[in-house]
Image 1: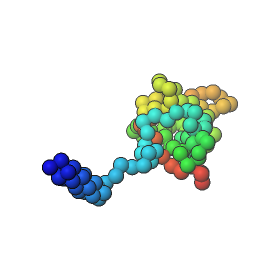
Image 2 (image 1 turned 90 degrees about the vertical axis):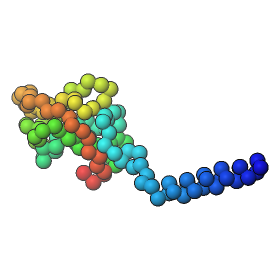
Image 3 (image 1 turned 180 degrees about the vertical axis):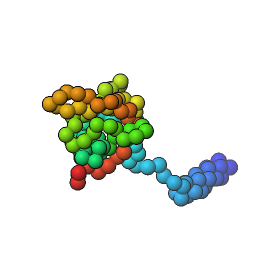
Image 4 (image 1 turned 60 degrees about the vertical axis):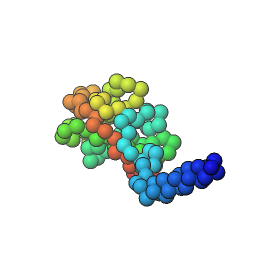
Amino acid sequence: MRRLTRSIVIAAFAVATAADAGAPQPAAQGSTAPRCVKPARVAAPVARPDGRVFLRGQPNAARSYFIRFKGAPCAGLDRFSIVKVETTAAGYCEGDKVRAYRDATRIEAPACVIDGFDPVDGRGL
């Protein structure tokens, strides 16, 4: 009887495993947009000519991010801007503020709020 019970349990496990094989698998780790990015894992934020802020992954540029802002694009960002992130946690997180300013004038643009991070392979950027 004990041997029959063990066979039934093994058969049930095999059926359950086969059924899970066709189920959708979770995305690979690191492929989804994070809520926070640790500053130690990225280079300093850089304003791009298209008005976006880029965080190049360090030491792996394949784990880079564009910062996404709430509402409209961040005013005052261009390729000459210096970017300052005002963090509230141990990293760059959703809800933190980004300010741009020009080095010569030190006049800050209005703050923009981080809505999230878009992962991008930064090796070609």
